[in-house]
Length: 195
Image 1 (spheres, rainbow, N blue to C red):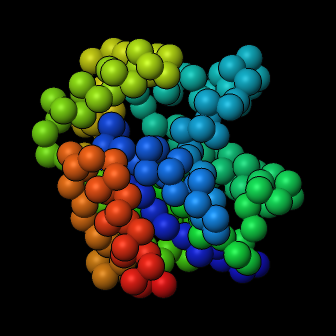
Image 2: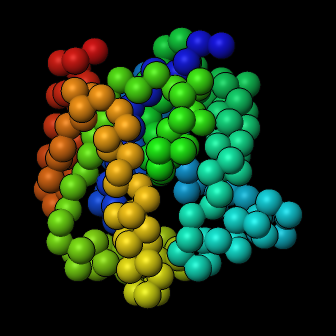
């Protein structure tokens, strides 16, 4: 199997990964897949949906093997429906891989070409963004500050170390407090310059 040429958008909850991924996904030859969207598309009454809610409602990560299996099924469906064309498109991922174990499990599927780390040391700014998103997008997982702080702590402990899994030359750090257009400009500039 040919590995998908991949761009990872990486950062803490609220750093703008989804915004950038969705915007890039509207550009020809970029296909965006957010792990959160895959999960939110689950039927909450199904066995897998209940399993997911057991973790997400407490701000915890879904087990790695389950996450990667769900992602693989989703990508296969997107290829089958011709929404994602691996021979032509860059695969834009946000929210997956979320840790070193997932990165290892996904190694056979993805060929990471770029990593954009959206960095925002001001955690209060991230909390405000997430609360605003909860109201706007009806995302209950973003409404409770205790759950938000738990997700940020989980990111620091489990996800942030993944930055060191990949070759540092693939990574570009971007200030997530910049406007979305400025962040997008930096991402596109880097991708076009380093195809």
